[in-house]
Image (cartoon, rainbow, N blue to C red; front, side, top):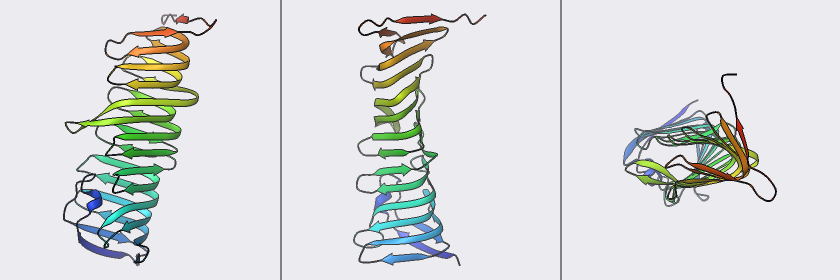
Length: 254
């Protein structure tokens, strides 16, 4: 039997991240709700749906922690095909495991095909996606980790970074990548390949380390260290010790 409740609720947990004020929230769960007063959490089981004017959350098992009362939410844990949509902030997530920590405004996603989408940034991973809305720091860790925005596309085993909010948009200020083998970075006209990379927006420079290749048009340059100036699109490559920089020019007409 499906369990249905309506709550007039002030969810402090979403007051900043999902911009929810006093609203009517509909919660349904096929196997009902269990409240653990001493442990301060309640459990929603099977085909859980939490629907409000500004956000939707679905999953197979949702555990909601509270402090003073049921509505004083401190944390949400959810597992099993978890999906979140926040219309107000343009946030959409998909994962097998979902955690939201209220005081830190931090979202943690785990599992294959995890994704976190905003109006400005797209994140994908088969491992971990972690984003803190207060500090702007984020982490993607695992196979097929990818980050995209209008300026850059990155594929890497590990992606660390930080964004700043500017006029309701999220601008990437810092990025660092690390790979077991190689990672890929693509700008509007250049492909970058390296084992590790660092980007600082204030310098407009992407630094590349180890097994470096920079490809633009029919030219590919290989070396041990590279830099791309994203402001004027210039780049350079160096090599260490006795290694030499290699330039490969491909004739596309052949």
